[in-house]
Each structure stands twice: as C-alpha cells, then as structure tokens.
Amino acid sequence: MSSGSAGDSLRAATAEDVEALSRLRVEFWEDQVRKGLLDLRPFDLDSLRTETRGLIGRQRSHLVVVERAGEIAAYAYAQVKIVPGAAQSRVAVIEELYVPRSKSNVTVALVLMRSMIETLTGAGAERIQCRVLNANDEAKTFHELCGFEPNLVIYEYPL
Image (tube, rainbow, N blue to C red; front, side, top):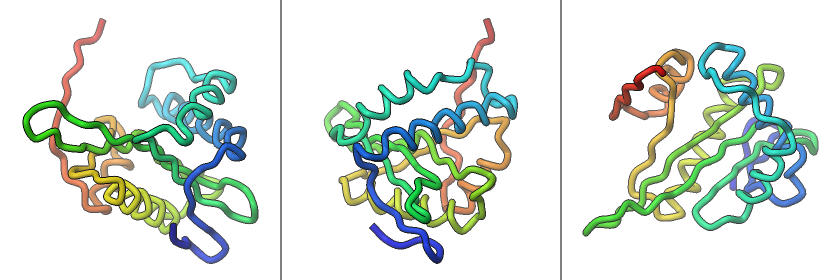
C-alpha cells in the first residue's frame, strides 16, 4: 500500500485492528443515522466487532485503513462479487468509507479512496461501484470528485 498525508500510512487491516476498526465502524453507522441518512438503529460494538473480525482476511473482502501516529484514523471496506452469467464479471462494491470529522480533510479521504481502487483492481475487479444514499449530497459530491458516475437508481417503497 502507499503513503497518505504526512505521517499517515495506508495498509490492509489485520486482526490486531479489530477493536479500533469496530469502534470506527460504530461511529460511521451512528453518523449516518444522526445525519438522517439511515433510519436503522445504530449497531452495537459487539455485533460490529464480530462482523469486522469475519471480514478481515475473508476472500473477496477488503478493508484498508489509514494509520496515523500508531492509531487507525480512517477506513474503507469493499467486497468483490462475481456476477453470475456467461461473462462472470467481477464487480467490486465499496460499502463503507469513513474519515471522522476530527481527523478529516479531503486529502485523507481521496488518498483512502485511491488506495481502495488500487486494491480492488489488483484483486481483479472489472467494475467498481459504491453505495451512496440519495440524501447524502456530501458523499455524492465526493464520489463524483473521485471519478465515479451515477449509474443505478433504486426506488424503495416505504412500509
């Protein structure tokens, strides 16, 4: 992996990162709910710890972290899916990318995204997608800045 901003390093997450990464993932989900982007209840640390432990090292799952001064400062999580059919194409989906406001600057997020794109293309991805909620204008602007283009709209029927 590459280096980020001065003093930052990017690398694949390891089993030693589970606790810190799980706490950041709780922050990510709580932030989404607080902004009104999701109506799900926040995930608890124990469930995300178990899920995070399972994601690290799982084939076709990728967790990239930004390490700053020996601590995990930000992360991105993606998975590569093999789409059935004659072509069996590999489609990567970036599920989460989180840089806490306290550690935030656009450069950290851009470097993290570029690193994840390199990781996914290195893993054989033929297309890379990301999930952005329609109400999240900040995320839409960021992903367009990174070169992503809108491709699919999913309508949801409220129950």
